[in-house]
Image (cartoon, rainbow, N blue to C red; front, side, top):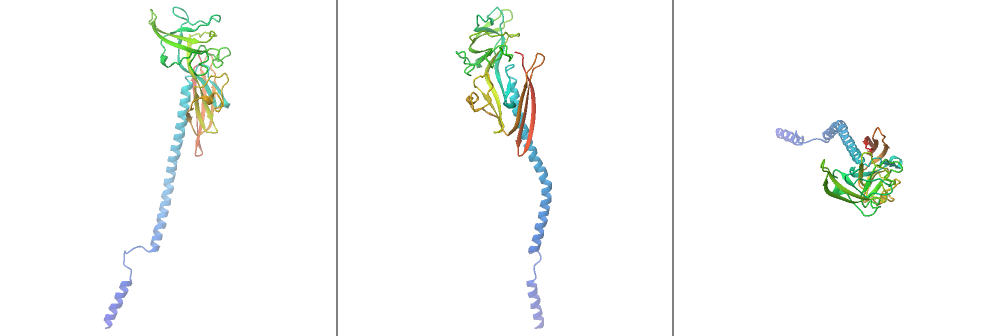
Length: 308
């Protein structure tokens, strides 16, 4: 009987004893959590730096790309400006120019139909030496003011930008009324001619030493708005002697849907140094774009032709 009682007591104690490997105690779980937190914190310190660096580098690359693309776009167009037509206003935040669509050389003397510069007998046509490459793109109009109002392309000869030879003041500008490919050729060198007529009401004031002429299709303005943080491009508005500076007022307000060139702009500046007889004009554009408190500033310069 005594032996049976001892066996029963040992069996009861065995049943109450915890089984090895049955689970974790609360203390063990807390220890595991604490250790895991320490490991995660250490790992985060090593990982956070590279991740932040990657994000910052990606943002800087995007800002640089946006600024560089905008500057290249504007400089590329400024190289198409009519010689001596670039002008800057708005404390360096507006730059305007007359865009050249086509250019060539006019016939200065016979045979053929030369361009006359006699004030007493204004000319209305001349032969083009060679062939116009973009003849089909030239817009014509019947009225003498059509090109100034943006309804036709303008013919410009010898634009120096000085009084008496300034296209903005319409001193040497005329509306193109007709462009005809007559298919003729010079018997000696087989140069093709195109007959081009214009409406001026008076003779051009000065001949070009190199017999150059230009076809201007529109004025263009790049306007930097620091309040909106944007640069927008305006075209197809009327030509004014005074440079427009307010996009909300005519003539810029009449430009159809000015496209966005770049956003996130925090600073910008355009400068123009007119050329001389020994060097071309120089355009300098500085642009700063900002995002998340970080700014990128780029500067680009370009020589622009000034030989009229």
